[in-house]
Amino acid sequence: DKEVVLAAVSVYGSALQYAADGPRADKEVVLAAVSEYGSALQHASDGLRSDKEVVLAAVSSPAYGSGLALQHAADDLRADKEVVLAAISQNGHVLQFAAENMKADKEVVRLGAATEAGYQDYAAATAAGACIAHDLCDKASSTEGNCIIPMAWNDLAKMDLHRKVMLQTVKSLRQLHQ
Image (cartoon, rainbow, N blue to C red; front, side):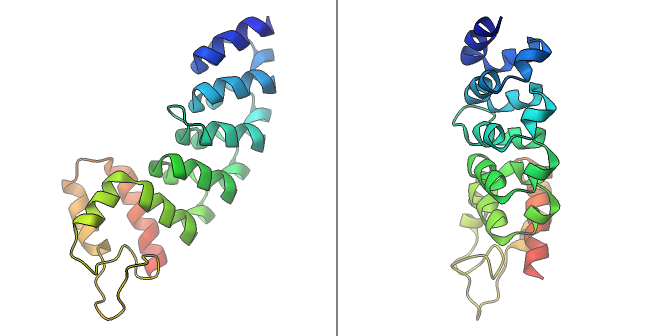
């Protein structure tokens, strides 16, 4: 019964995983689920994981797991700048789930670095004038030539914050820096 499933996912979005195929393909039910728990997108039908409205709702919801829903979106939407920016604004870690063209996009990488708490804290702790990647950082000084990327690359092994995601962010920044 649609009303029962709708009531359940409105309170507990991941309850979508227990629904039959019909409600998983019902846009109203899935929108309610992802609004409550963004990562409920993984339990939606393939068709709705390809629906931009549903994916945007999943990745931009203030609910827990919203940005992480990007990993469950259809490939074409993981290459959609609007979708990727919405996801990354919620959680910088999701850069790893974006399509390659998005990982090379300066605006996307900049936002990912800005919302990545560990990277942001690391960058703030560096000496004044250092930059994340010279042409990405508004505070970059062309005369100083300082860049934290080489330091960050070696120090990441020592950091206790999501090493794998941090490495991907730094790799993306390095590509843009070259």
